[in-house]
Structures are given as structure tokens and as C-alpha cells.
Amino acid sequence: MHTITDTSNMDRELLISRVINAPVEKVYRAWTEPELLMQWFTPAPWKTVKAELDLRPGGANLIVMRGPDGQEFPNRGVYLEVIKNQKLVFTDAYVKAWEPSAKPFMTVVLTFEDVGGKTKYNARVYHWTEADRETHEKMGFREGWGKATDQLEALVAKI
Amino acid sequence: MHTITDTSNMDRELLISRVINAPVEKVYRAWTEPELLMQWFTPAPWKTVKAELDLRPGGANLIVMRGPDGQEFPNRGVYLEVIKNQKLVFTDAYVKAWEPSAKPFMTVVLTFEDVGGKTKYNARVYHWTEADRETHEKMGFREGWGKATDQLEALVAKI
Image (cartoon, rainbow over all chains, first blue to last red; front, side, top):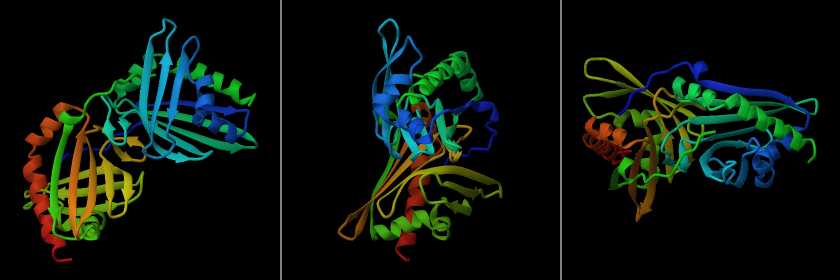
């Protein structure tokens, strides 16, 4: 048997927090309908060329991104919690239920909260180590997720 | 964003497989009722002195084991899948939903299958790395889980 100890996660977390000028239903749709997700998910000039979303706890997702030079990057994960229009949790620790991935890197907890017809949108990204959080920051988390979230806002304004 | 690739998990898995001479309902109870679990879970002379089991996807569990010298070892985890009398999945990758643990070590997939009133019992233990699977073996997985499973069989014979 294996023993673990508690640690604070404050130093392992990244957060995008915004009020989006659209109802929660639309923001949730943008995260859960493949044809919508593909339109905003990847910061240009990158593209999302495939999105398979089996939207249930234990369901797998596959999102394939294509770089400017044509190289494709598949991202696999599993949903852990799905509450329509409220909360969506997924992780890359599994490639399907319950096959461990090569590297458990992050768990994403999205919350959608109605504030007078707008959406208080929080994307909390938890890492298993402080080093991975730092790596994610250096990979351009704030710019990348920031730009993607701009694209999300632009999309939900017109659906 | 982070890219992962598929790997085979055959070299990262440990398995206990038995036919237990008791119906699936009893074997499932032994894993899910704290007062029962405490009676078999820890190979003697170790004891299980606390078991808190929030039995739902995303629910946390805390199992405290006490060694022969009195030292206590808390084990925290989260249930990922709960199908009564059929399947139970939990991992130590989280200490609660969805706070990453200090070290994602294993995911346990238990299946309970009725075979003519007896139970085909499989405990599959998946690790994220081959090194962790080896560590788990060297920690005495086969003896420890084997002895615990003997205790489980003895318990379900009398409940």
C-alpha cells in the first residue's frame, strides 16, 4: 500500500477568471459541442482539427491541434465531472477510463456561474507538482489560454 | 497546452484475480461498508483503524492503517466510478475532488462478476509508470494484497 500526505495546492494552480457577456448555456455549449469548440479552442494560427467529446464521467475526449507547420498534436483526456451549464472537470491523467496516461500533467475544473445573464467563468488548472505548474506557465499558459478565451468570448457573442 | 501519447499499460499493471465463494453483494459490501472493510483491509499484524468512504464519483476516502509499532498511515483517495455490486474505481491521484495528491501512484479498478452465486473478483491496479509498478511489487503487493484478500474471503464467508 502507498502512503501520501496532504499538500497545499495553491502553488500548483493556474487560473483564468472572467465575466463573459453571454449566458451560461452558450459558454457551456462552446466547451461541449465539438463544432463550436473547434472554432475557439486553439490560439491562432494554430487550429483545432478534431474534437471528440464523450461527455460523461469516465468519458474520453480527444482534441487534435494542428500547428502552423502542419504538425498535429493529439490531446487525450477523460471527463471526471459533468454538470450541465455549471461545471466541467477533465484530466489528462487518463487516456480513457481508466488507463493512465504517459504523464499526469493537469486537471481542469471549469465553472460557469450566472451573474445577471452574464457568465462568471473560472478555469482552474491544477497540476500535480509545482514544477509542472511552472512548465505550463513557461509554455505560455496565460497568453495561450488568454487568447483562446478571447476567441471563446467572440464566438459566444454570435451564437 | 500539453501533449501526451498513448502507451501500452500492460507493463504498468498489477492484478489480483480470484473466484470468491460468496455472492457479489457480500464482496461489494466488504469494500464499501467501513465497519466491514476495517476487518479485512490490512494484512495482520497491521490494522485498519479508520475508514471514511464517501461512495460516489468524486467522493473522497480516507483509510488509516496502523503498523505493529503504533505508527499510523493515512491513505487518501477519490472514487472515480461506483456501480453497485459490479464495479468500483478509485485513485490516490486526488485527495479530494479535484485536488491533486502529492504523488499519483495508482488507480484501482475492482470488478465483481456473478458466476453461479460465487464472485469472480478482479482487482486491477494501474500505475502511471513502470517504475511505480515495480516499486509496488517490491513493497510487497502480491503478499500484502494476497493476504488481505484471504482476509476478505474469510470475512464474507461469515457475513
